[in-house]
Amino acid sequence: MTEELAKKDAYIRSTEAVVVEAAPEGVVLDRTVFYAEGGGQPGDHGWLRWDGGELKITDTVRRDGRVVHVVEGSPPAEGTAVQTEVDWERRHLLMRTHTALHVLSGIIWTDYGAKVTGGNMQSGEARMDFELESMSAEFGREVEGKLNAALAGGRRVQVLFVLRAEALADPDLIRTKVSLIPEAVDPIRVIDIDGVDRQADGGTHVANTNEVGQVRVVKTESKGKAFKRMRIAVGD
Ligand SMILES: [Zn+2]
Image (tube, rainbow, N blue to C red):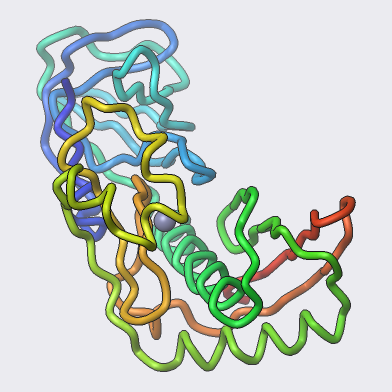
């Protein structure tokens, strides 16, 4: 099992670690600051350095429960002491993008009563699907205004570890299908954004919504009945 430091603190950029497994497809470490792809958030990129070598980490994925750092080139042998550093510019933009999606989903639920049915993100751009009957460009502008106002409100983003029994009784978590999380997971990791959104989540987020900056709604589209998509852009 790899100790995943980003689950508790998304701001750690680098760490010392030891290679637990070295395979052609990637490296497993005893601890990591890298986020493995999942929940709509892409895996981290960065660098793996050791005495006499350096490799670029081009992706981070989860395979059979292990966090695999995908590298280009021959990885160092098992037991090697290494230093890892995440590509912070990319990751921080992902944290901002991911946090914006939470606030967006909270607004669409609170103000329009519509649930999220899907979503995905890259660094600086994302899409989210809603169970809505219609979605116009005008609606997009209205939501953009509300989204930026909520973000600028400086709301705290907390990482909580909630006992499963408690989580299963929480209305916000019930709505976001906490019951689908495997039974062995206890406590459950919850992201709580003050007064806006609360959901079980494994991703990385900024600590305060004002760190997200300006968000633009760049596209609204209909993908079918009660299936509407909104695309947003974060950053420059
Ligand atoms: Zn999240």
